[in-house]
Amino acid sequence: MTAPDLMMAVALAAAALELGANGLYLRHVCLGHTVPTRMTWLIWTPLAWMGVMASIEAGATLTVIKLVMSATGTTAIMLLALRYGSGGLSRSDQACLGITVAGVCLWQALDDPVLGIVFFLIADAAGAVPSLRDAWHAPRKERVLPWLLGLFSCLLALSVVELDRWGQGWAGFGIWVIPFYLALVNGSMVLLLCRPDRPAVAAVPAS
Image (cartoon, rainbow, N blue to C red; front, side):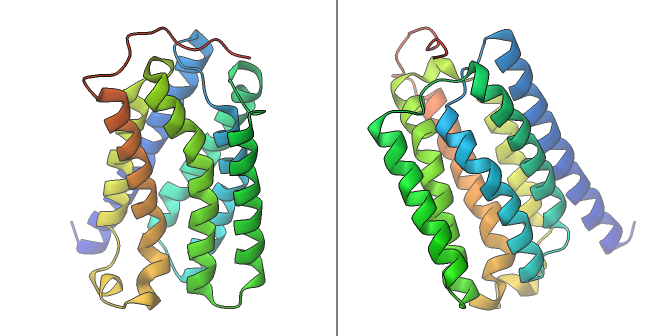
């Protein structure tokens, strides 16, 4: 197997893991084992597709396969979250939405692609806050395996980033930063859901 073939195989494995993670999450929601945080998925859905476009514009190739799978799964989860999810109207959720909107506006207004991606990540991180908050206060409303599979998918996606991209400074930043950020989010959820002092409470009912 040649090096390009190996890289493609790894990229496809990352996409398959992402598909598995999203499929498992959707199954858990349908079975009532997971109660998704509405605001997170409402924010993440449009941003996921914006992230795909930003990565393509930055010159990403193989990592885009995983990002497309992630965006597709995020869209499906968002649709289920509208019915089976919780939250969305609290002040903290609305504040996260406001930060996201401001971040997206700054991202679109700036000509500097690096600063644009930074504000994009700030906007996306604001969407992660409601889920991270709920994972801290009510970890039983989520299952860890989909997030763990998502983490492994991100790590595989990072492994197919060309070595010279890592040494290009800001020029390579747009190639690897989104899967790196997604790995941080998934890893944070795994740690919160697996912490030994997590409250022994049932999942939060959908509202």
